[in-house]
Image 1 (cartoon, rainbow, N blue to C red):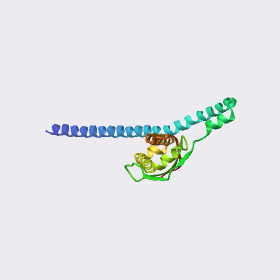
Image 2 (cartoon, helix red, strand yellow):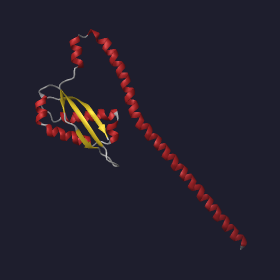
Image 3 (cartoon, rainbow, N blue to C red):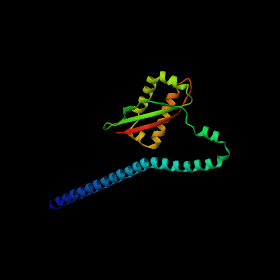
Length: 183
């Protein structure tokens, strides 16, 4: 009987040791997964900004080279290429960003580059609709979507596409943010 009790006690101690070892292994695996996931997310978030900077630098070099090569183009043709069309200023937009935690808002002022001055009258007539479309686009964005340079470029392209779909007399060639505050 005494021998049976000793065997049972040894089995219980061995079972406790096995379960505590198994628990330690599970904790270590979970911690490693959390660290790996955190590293991947950090790399992805930082790579967007770095890629945008790396893409801009070669473009600047190419522009300088192109300017030197195009010296045979007349000054008038160069002026036409570098000119910005007529600008149509919009009032400031202050909207809440889409967010799960906390309240974030975006304050934006922008100018629209028009294909020609004849478009101004149509934009004046459709001011309410234009503001509504822009507000809907801005409120659908999260902080992460609008905080990077790539996100701002995508936002301006989306605004330009939405507004061009509703215009008859011309088109919007560009959207320029003159104020962009996230809080």
